Amino acid sequence: MKNLIAPLFTLMALLCFCQLHSTELEKLKLESYPNPTSRTFSVDLPQIQTAERLEVIGYNGQPVLFEVNQSRTIEIDLLHFPPGLYLYHISTAEGKLLTGKVLKL
Image 1 (tube, helix red, strand yellow):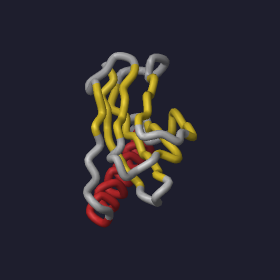
Image 2 (tube, helix red, strand yellow):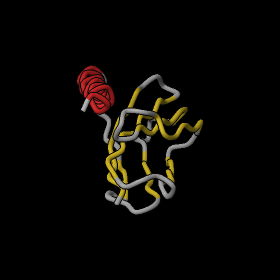
Image 3 (tube, helix red, strand yellow):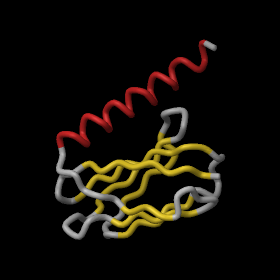
Image 4 (cartoon, rainbow, N blue to C red):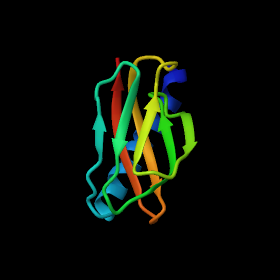
């Protein structure tokens, strides 16, 4: 039980952080598909945004993937990761932090 507390606390802190930033930033709609997925999914950024950095966070609150990407459509491959809920953070060249979640089957 003690081993589960730290990752759970980390995930809760990340979720609170995401909610805080989503209310402070402009509401920008992310299109992610397919969701749920068994392998890859894509994220389309709003027209005025260009991705600069992508981070995917696993169910335990630990980063599992980090990419530098400069495009408006990002494809993420989760083939080698176990099923579960993943959060993703996209930092844009315009200084925004966009967040989303995807379910891997």
